[in-house]
Image (tube, rainbow, N blue to C red; front, top):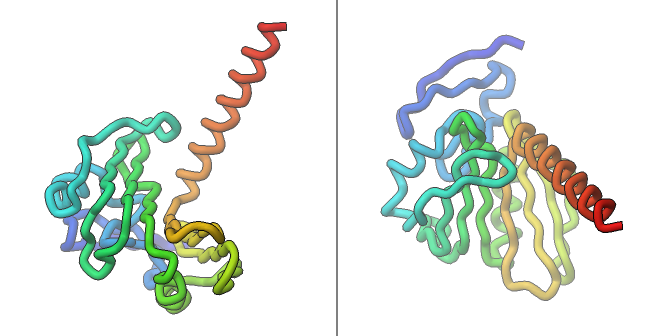
Length: 181
């Protein structure tokens, strides 16, 4: 598949998308996953979103940007924002805590932009929905007893890095257990 390079004025980064999937690229809050850097996000949104000082992720080995109250326009009631980058400083994961009552409206908006893969969003009980974009998977999850829901965007690289980290942690735990015996 042929790749096109376009310039995105908002964050000044180059955007790599296929000509077939141009409209299906996930760019939550103007952050294009896999392209935009944590450095760009931190420089452009640090004070507006009240970002904490950057840290390093144990599983991705890249920068973590977080805010407990980002005050995002249009999502004023949204809670914790988490942006995680890979070692090359590309955003590979973004999550946002949203009010559970907003789930249906947000899900409807996501239905219009992305391919729905799985959906179980009842009015009562726990809920889960997943969409597919050219550069990421998008999920909404919530528990029955919670007032909050979690909206996450993650790239395949994010999933692979986290799975690798999880396997390594399990191996270390198994090794530690065996050494105790």
